[in-house]
Every structure is written in structure tokens, then in C-alpha cells.
Image (cartoon, rainbow, N blue to C red; front, top):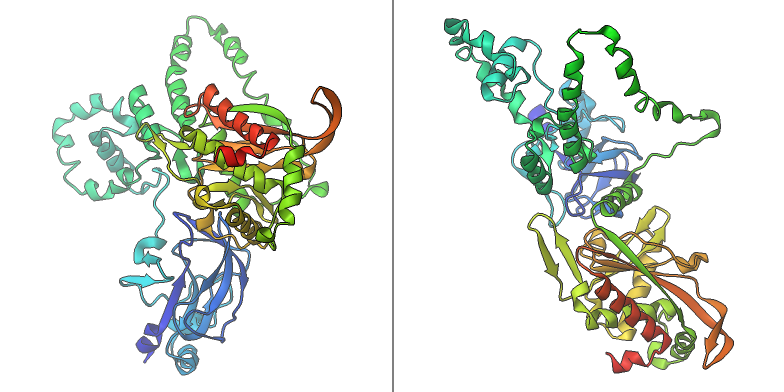
Length: 513
């Protein structure tokens, strides 16, 4: 009877609601233990590194337990809610029968709820599935070696060629020749498996760099997110290998006066440590997670991967603003969002059509430039959860009314915090409007994987030479940042000059289109 009850409990696991995301934060539960749920009913709202998403349950039943409270960050593949698909009778009988289901009325946050369906693959959402082994997190550190047999593990590691004792152990190992034979025979093989199972985490370019420099990744201390080895870690390992050489001449004891010499080196190291101080009584700590964490990681990666170049141009946009006012009165644009951003976006699309080589990305793994024959136009949007960059798919094919409609939907969805993860994937170029904050211009950082980003400054009434006379005109400054691996100065200048020319003479939208 108990077996049947346990078999009726289904565990709903955190799905990967984005593309390769590893975790999500539970923002809000819409159900409580004892509630009846139906297939397709939304049970909670979660926030990933991309956006907030509502999760529907894929079966009918009675909620038996919520494994995590609101505000908890949960790994993809972890069970978050238990549902008794047999109905209320089975769930009511379960706690009274045995100690095994005693955790049925589990309080939120207890991960010990029964996991009955450990076999096979459990469908979660349409298009998503979680393997039974997905709750197992891959090892991130190779130091998890059983402490019971240090000698056997050390010998096996030495035999494998990657043990720390590989440099010192050969001499003692050869002396006791007969005793060295039984050492591998006992079963250190299986016990030494943990030593080699943790493969260092690194991207292909980093692995190639390590190979070129002769660095064993197993000896490198990772500093990247989730234990990933970065280029800096490899260079640091090279520096460490070279560092001991000057210290060895100091080991011989010709003169103990070598003590003051090392004192010169530590002077630089301790300096940064005592600089930081905190006043907990007058400070607030905000955990970095969700969209803000993803944005921070992406910006750091972009800034230190793609060589940025930024160019600026100041342009008279008086005619563009007049055209905006005329379009607002046009019956074909009624009900649509018409503003300067719309015409600037259209101007950038025309400039990209005239200079298609800028619409590309850099494939580091294959060392290739990928030319793109479509434009997914990203629009940077500030939201309560942080900065996001959704993009308009195939913006190059849209008419002006269609582009205005797409912009309106994009902005409205972003403000509500309902931008789906798919809308933030696959962007090619981006526009960021810092002018709405009264800022003249800036040097924007590329969205990862994109080739260029255009910053729009504030449009202000300024004295300007127009037709030989100084007159008050509407003026703004544009800034174009681009990846100098993909875009040279000539190409970047042409694109920025074309955008400026269109905004100064909007009729070029017709002659250049």
C-alpha cells in the first residue's frame, strides 16, 4: 500500500527555461500544500539570468510539498514541488501508514520529499526534459580524494603521470622493486578514480593556450564562474612556474642575509589587502543574482574579450524631429509608437544594408568571422530587475509601421518584466538610448556575440551653423562602439557617417533604401 502511495508522487523539477541556463530563483509560489492542480496550471514564477518566467505543472494532482521557499536559487534539474497524482485519498493515507512518507507534509525548504520516479526521463515543459541524472552536479574540484588511502592514491596518481609526487617519487619507487608490483594490484585503481574524474573546466581557446604554453590544466587554479579556467589563470600558472627559479638560489645557505631580500617582494602583495573596510551598521549588501549577475558576467567577458573601438559624431537632427511630428499625424501610423528612436533604428538598418560586412560575429573556437545576412536589432532596456537587451527578429525586413509596432511591444514587455529568454538570444547589433537620462553620449560595451552598438545622446537645442548662419538647432551626439577584430576604422566610420547623414537628411531613407 505504501509502495503504491509513493509511486503516485511525482516530482516536478526545475526546467531549463532558457538556453543552457543552470539555475533559477523562485520568485513566488501560486500554490500551497494540499491545493489541487491541473495540467498546464501555473504553480510558480521564477527568475533566470534572462527574465522572469511562469512555470506550469505538467500533470493533475494534489500538491504534497513545496521543497524550496520563495527567494531560493535552485539548480536546473532539482525537484521543487511534489504532487500526488493519485488524488487526495492517497496523499491523506500516506502520512498515516509509514515513516517513509512522513515527510509528505514537508515544510517549504525541505528537499527530503520522496523521489519516486527516479527511472527514465520526466517531461517537464513542452520542449524541455530533465534526465534523472541531471540533479548530479559535475565535480568542479579535483581535490575530493578519499582520505583513507593517501599512499595508494598518491602512488596511483604518480603512475598516471599527473600526481604531485611525480617529481620526487621515482627514486623511492624503483628501489623497492618487488614491493612496487603489489601496489597497483590491490584495488587502488577504483579508489583512485576520483583523482582523474574531475576534468578541468575550460573553453577550447583556453585549452589551446595552455597546450601552446605547456601548462597542465589539472594544476591550474580556476577563478572563473563555476570553476572555469580562464586565460588569466593559465598565464598566472606560467608565472608561478617561472617564479620559483629566483627563489632556489636563495635556498643554499651561503649567507643567511638572504632574509632581507624576500622582504622586498612581499611589500607589493600585502598592499591591496588592508585597503577595503566596511561599516556594517551603515551599509546594505545586495546579493548579485538573476539578470544583474548575468549582465555583470557578460559585460566583463565582452570588455576583456573583444577589442573595443568607439567613434563619435555630432549631428543636426532638426529635420528628423520634424518628420517624427509629421508621422504622428499620418493615418498609417495611428496607434503606433512614433519617436526619434524609431527613425534612428531605421537609419541604422539602412546603414547596415549599405555596409553589410559590419553585421558579423567572431567565432573564437574556429577562428572564423561569421557574416550574417539578417539583422536582429537589440534595444537596451532598463528594467526593475536590471539591464536587458531584447532584440527585434529580422528587423531588416520590416516596414516602418512594422518596426514601430515591434518596438512598442518590446518596450512594453520589458517594462512588465515579461521578456521571454528567446527574445534576448541571437542579437546582431544593438541600440542604447542614454539620451533619455539627459546624457550627451558614452562609450557603450558590446553585447556579447555582437559586432557593434550605437549609443544615442540627448537631443538638445544648441547653436549650430546652418546655411552659413548660426541658428538654434536640435543637435545630438552618436557613439558607435565596434569589435575591432571584425570592423576596421574605415568600415566603422562609414556606418556611423551613414546614420548621421540620414538623421540630418531623412529623405535619404527613400534614396538609400
